Length: 193
Image 1: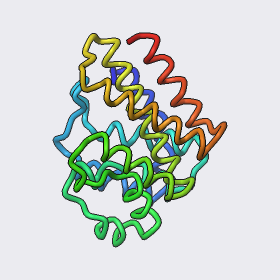
Image 2: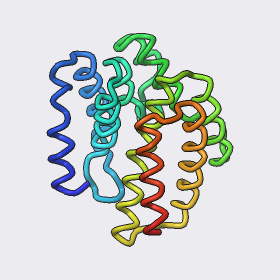
Image 3: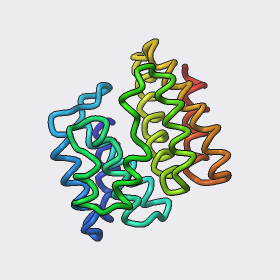
């Protein structure tokens, strides 16, 4: 994310002040992701969960879903546990975060991502929305990587996962604005890669 994109994202986060749950989730995520950076540009990693939360808020989701968007990576990328999330944010938020988190016991990346898509498919529309917003944000980041000449071989695997995710989301949420946004990002990525 460049400076202008950071300012745009920050301007879009005024909703956080109106939601104690989302504000608490952001504080938790920022604390747990402290020191982590995005590999593309070195910005704090938490900018990604904030973008996911913005997408969910703009799509009209409840505070619980938006808070889950802020927290969606804490189980995979930090030492946070599902029980921590249940105690602090409630069962609904914890369940959504768990539904969009990889199973670390599956060693093969492709198998783990396929299992994640199946898990999301069983978890319901709100989990699918968090998953979709995450993929929109990640596809945008990948497109910026391509724009900066930093496309890597491992990115091809990510694109395959994002395309498979789009197929799943088109079945689960046909015509949804997050699905349309993901399709647009993948189309733009295809045009530049």
